Length: 295
Image (tube, rainbow, N blue to C red; front, side):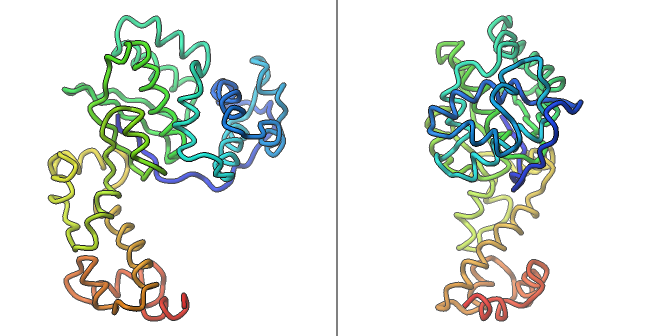
């Protein structure tokens, strides 16, 4: 399963609960008990986005997607639990009656996935599920750039299929386009490897080993396959490497024991001038000026 997700919006702009548009209310309704079990003040979260519990619990009342998203954004900001999306999936046996029925009444896992893909297209425009006819079967979950929705779609769907097949179904691997808060917990719960390009790069960047062949080998895939899968998620290896280098550069510059030339070498640049050009593109200033300002 390969979800695309790059970042969570820092804030939502709730609109009137009765505005006409696609709604995420069935999912939010299903997750309210889990939020309470995890220690959240659900009424407080709802009030913060202009909702009341009755708005969400009544299936005939329209709730705007922005308001639903706002509830999850505020829950994430509280940082009460790690991997909130995974915890919600674990504490929610049934997210909503209709998608649950579509899954449990399907003739096969493939049929259930097809039904789930159609459900998301109609009821949740944020998530698009595509089934790639490969061996093993690959499911691509496009969350429109929202890592929370990507994680919850992956975690809930896979856990639901595992329960329905008495743990006979196993994912070969899950690949995220972003770095989960705790990938090891995902691997333990979903019982499969969690591949993450950023994490692989981050662990290799200090040795300058940032070429795509080495990262592909670490992820047990080929260069061509890795490039194709990143392209399908709307990004590229070069873009991810650039971001990993930027973050590492900021961390290294905070450590005054390393010279700027040392940092350029550690990040895999052929010469210091290449690092200077990249850093000026990132921050609009030189590494030396950035270090001085930070100190």
